[in-house]
Image 1: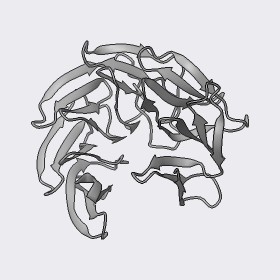
Image 2 (image 1 turned 90 degrees about the vertical axis):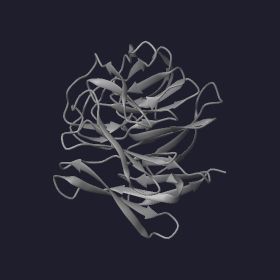
Image 3 (image 1 turned 120 degrees about the vertical axis):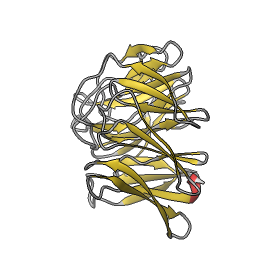
Length: 293
């Protein structure tokens, strides 16, 4: 169902009924609205999974909503372990659970009932504002990776923060990165790809230990990384403030094998199209598509 609909979260007024609009992906027809509580929030996209739409919101933050994707009926809304995060994030979801970063805790909800199953303390939490950037990353070893801080706003280049890994089995933090990072990471095949600035480096971190496996440096010293990363079987895509790069994962030297003057936020569609919401280059505020086949 999620693939047949488009969800657009909006901030209308400080109230208990701010709408996420549901639009038919084929026709553009308005279908319904999903109301959540919020006050002047900057929303991340909802998470669509199975027959559910999951939204992180709350009038004072800290609340997760589960709506039926077909009908728009609210099935449950529950608070996590704290209200340290008010906006700018999205939950992670799998077959059984919903995962939410509340700042002071990593919260795990039963996907069917909304019952909170675990609330793992975050010893690395650093206060930086009520906002966040992204959401929990579900790992391959029953683990969750997050930025363990909060931020002042949702931006293309977040304030530098370490990454932290939490074991869902032992219910505790197991590592924190030695460096601080400024982009939304990507995880693939046991490796976390994330970029830092001052100086600019793309680091490949071990998912198990957090140690740096290798790094890549952009060709121009004045460049700084922005946005998010995407990892595929053989490439990792990363954007600086001036260029978009594809870095080889199959070549042990990890060279840049392609670049374009269209920096920005990136995603890959189901038809192997690379989509770039261009930022900083001229003209700005445009959407560019590349065929990856």
